[in-house]
Amino acid sequence: METVLVIVIVVAVLIAIAMLVAKSRNKSKEREFAQVQTEAHHDDVRHHHQQAEESRTEAAVAEERAERAKLEAELNEEKAAKRERELRDG
Image (cartoon, rainbow, N blue to C red; front, side):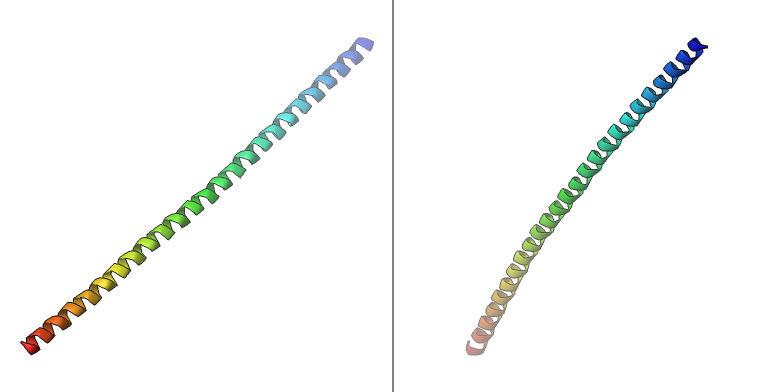
């Protein structure tokens, strides 16, 4: 009877140890998953920052083009006015 009791106790201890090891592994996996998830969030933030910077650059280029087009239009207006004066006076 004592042998059976010892075997039952040993089996119970082994089961308890196995449960603790499994729980520890699960916690470790949860921590690793949380870390990966946090890194993914940081990557998303970096990506949005990059997109914002690209949009700002595109806006600056568009502003420059618009300013050039405006100046070119003004120059053409001046040329047209000059030609009109020449035709009137000439």
